[in-house]
Image (spheres, rainbow, N blue to C red):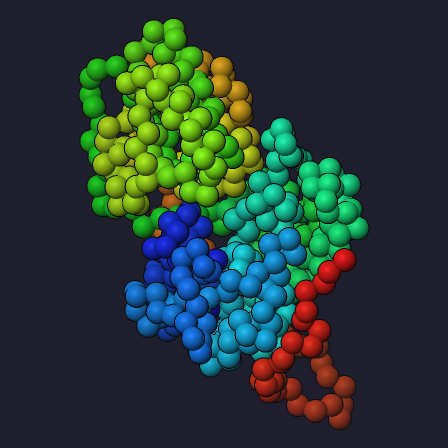
Amino acid sequence: MRVLHLVHNHPSLHPGGTEIFARELFRRLGRESGTTQLFVAAVDDLHRRPHPGTRFQSAGHGADEILLWAGHFDRFQLNQTDTEGTLFELGEMAENFRPDIIHFHHLLRFGANAVPFLRRVCPDARFVLSLHDYYALCHRDGVLLRNPANERCDGPSPTACNGCFPDISPARFRVRELMLKAHLSGFDRYIAPSRFLIDRYTDWGLPAGRITHIANGRAWPASAPPRRTDGPRNRFAVLGNLSVYKGTPVALAAARRLADLGVDFSLDVHGAARYQTDPFVARLEEDQRAIGSRARLHGSYQPAEVAGILSSADWVIVPSIWWENAPLVIDEAMHHGRPVLCSNIGGMAERVRDGVDGLHFRAGDALSLADAMQRAISEEGLWQRLASGIRPPRTIDDAARDHVALYEELLTPVAPAAAPIGSPAPGRRRRPSLPRSEGLSPITA
């Protein structure tokens, strides 16, 4: 089995949850007997400049991990506009690799129009798309939040989307929807890490029969940090990129309320404010100063540092205000035996069982989070009961086994109907030469 993994960035350049999971899956599948893997991560000027003469670069992690410069990308249409360059070189690489499975872990940078292009280059391959977020549904970075008040959106429509982006007409949003649905119809199967996300995409129009639920897994370290056996359980941690979507201001506002009430606690915020505005960062720093020594902003961290961070925490807070799908930090917290306080929406509420292995609070409500933190500190025996209720999170071996089963199912030949007498014998289709850009230009309206 030959599997081509297409990922929208490399975890060594951008350590997001999707990138980390995709690479760990790729490495785990690489240990399967009879399996050949190739990992292609798309990058742009934020991380790498293009090299003269080729769009491919070494990722520095082995010959089976490479970077593809794909900076000519239309974020509205989710299309790769460089069909004569980027898509053509991607097609040449795919033609030489001869994959049985082409697994898109995201559409960003590669473009939805890469699907029909690669289908023409690799007509015998099976195509899989992992749905890690809602980019196809929402032009606002896939968060399904309305501009400007950040109210949660139950689903897109041309009129509603025009309300968020008045400069883009409803007609253009309708064209975007039709184009994306046409390109996504080229996938043989979609993978969803949460059941909540399945409902959002089936409501949008993807066929439920082609969506498979496979929860993510991780290559967990062998040991977890020790748990304290005495003392108050009053130390909280937030991990992940700092942003409005991730609810960082909500966590700090809750901490500010507890500090005003004189509660004894600590809040450690770990993460970088990537691509955030100066006023946003200044607001976070102002909140931290108002809270005083009880709250600290530690900045960015590496995945290998998570165990050390959690050794100094009793609870992990996941305060996102958008419909998170399958936040990696929840599984990290549970692997290390730390109960989670999370927003009561989306994949977060699906993963964390309120009162069993964590606590829910109203999404975006700092007072509700402050109440949950106060309960976590003051209710006798609560931490021990919730920590004892944690189920071990899935491993990368679990996820790899489910992916292999799906790949094998897709590659299992379906018995053909009896051919009429005199029909030519069936045979493997001849691989066509690489298509140029006819019929592949981005649709505009």
